[in-house]
Image 1 (cartoon, rainbow, N blue to C red):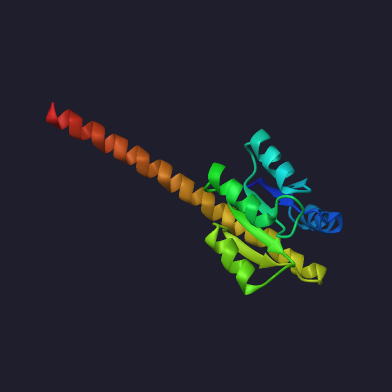
Image 2: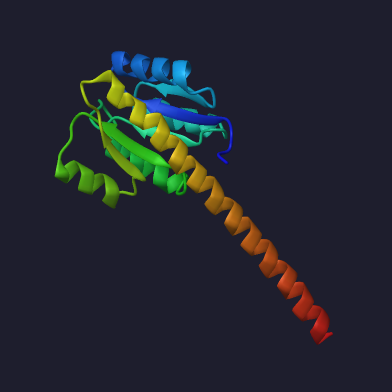
Length: 156
């Protein structure tokens, strides 16, 4: 069962796109919350100030700090945070650069607003997977510690 309450940081300099994403999520997805940033610098400041962001969704072409530069900065500080490059500037080259830089997913914006419904579903899938992997890693570490204690006890 999916974990409730997923917070998405949506980064896009186009207010119309941001408003569309926020409206779609608000109307159809009770378990998702969207916070927004209009550029990469604002996104990084938001991430520094919050610990509840579960996924970053960023446009590619933005002034000052583009989506790939933002992705690289996020990977340096938050290497496991799901990151979707969501762009209308689609090409195989951009997709390859995004994946090489560590994007979790690459999605193209389409003119049809209904195509934006794919984004929240993809976010939910990626965040659920990320949370499951984190739980697995915690359990593995706990098991290793418990095993180490037992081995130390036997040796004593």
